[in-house]
Length: 140
Ligand code: RTP
Ligand code: MG
Image (cartoon, rainbow, N blue to C red; front, side, top):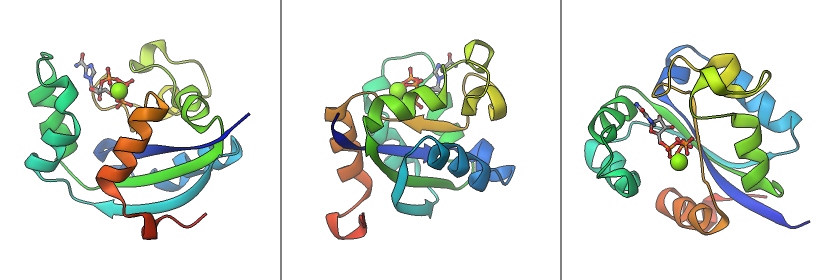
């Protein structure tokens, strides 16, 4: 197994409800280490660029509005098979379909306000980490 890094975002619905610590506990209990973390207010330009892959999707404008509706916590998580492990503990996009015990089953409000983002491949993880963090901000 390989040690990987993935990009995680605790979304505005979760920061609003003061759930950062509870979500971080799920990650840490799964063996993921938080090696970088910052609380930021995304702008429309930054959120729009981050989600550019979804530009043609019907939910794109709503997603960008939601992601700038309050602060987010952007993090780099490190561990064995971190990309897949993080996706597993997040649960399905739609909380109604998320397995019990996953972050989205426990905390998400809706398919949009679903509390967390996680990179979906190692290649995207590397790009998303570089989007938010300088190498000097990541401290394993
Ligand atoms: P994420 O990128 O946030 O980790 O989530 P994901 O891979 O599970 O879902 P993705 O298909 O990449 O969608 C990105 C985010 O867009 C919002 N969404 N809304 N209204 C809708 O039908 C809908 N579908 C997706 C969610 O916030 C989703 O996480
Ligand atoms: Mg995605």
